[in-house]
Image 1 (spheres, rainbow, N blue to C red):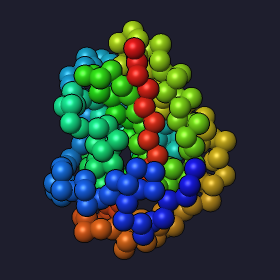
Image 2 (image 1 turned 90 degrees about the horizontal axis):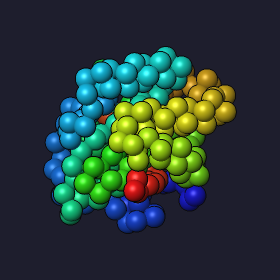
Image 3 (image 1 turned 90 degrees about the vertical axis):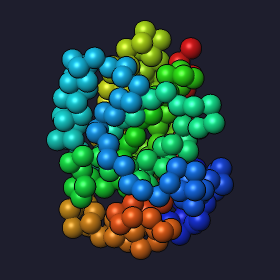
Length: 210
């Protein structure tokens, strides 16, 4: 994996940039829930179970932000582009400062194409490799085939948390003040984006569920 330059104007891998994303989707901030089910795929009980699982993961990893977007994406919208934009312009309720988007693990599920993917913020990207992401997606494949979407997302998060446990020493070394400083440094390099949302050229993996 080639390291990401925080001052780069576009992604080394695909050439996508914050300016392109803003032009296509707008530059406004959007408010999201941790489990943002725009496609109405989850029953209330399933969503509650998933939110409870995320609560436990956030207690274990208080610096990390775990969130998911379930939607019906139009043909002209790539999941990677949506993930990029949400990491720059999405604000998850209750995570304004304690869990910045730089620390996000975002799972996107598109029911139209039956694909699921992972988009990472800068800090999360430094802890989770492409191989880690692919293994997490493969682990959730049985759930996806059975339309168990909530369980699939939970499986992905749990698998990635095992990765974080192995790299926990790096997490424990970062105090809250250091995370704030990290976020501030990233924001100083933002490309005309709202405060607290620096460009995040995270790696992207996707898995076709059928």
